[in-house]
Amino acid sequence: MLQLTKESFEREAVESDKPVIVDFWAEWCGPCRIIAPVFEKLSSEYKKKLKFAKVDISKNQDLAEKYGVRAIPCLVVFNKGKEAGRIIGSLQEDKLKAKIDGILKSI
Image (tube, rainbow, N blue to C red):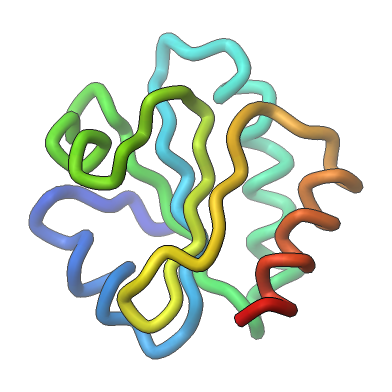
């Protein structure tokens, strides 16, 4: 799982040749801790279609501001440098997969 920072974000998320889903989260966020194992599990299931990464907003507030993250957990899918979709809140695995699949179909 990629841990992105201000220094690596552009290269790994925006300039990626593969769509990237970025989990904007924080250690103090209960729902973030709930969704983390699901996000981790899905990262192996979607390995061929989607790159998974995380941004700790406590350490990277500038990235959260830049991308308009106002509530966490916030999963943002980037494709070819642009936001392709956003999922806010902690979802059960089947609902999260359905939302990710919907975003991937629209790309």
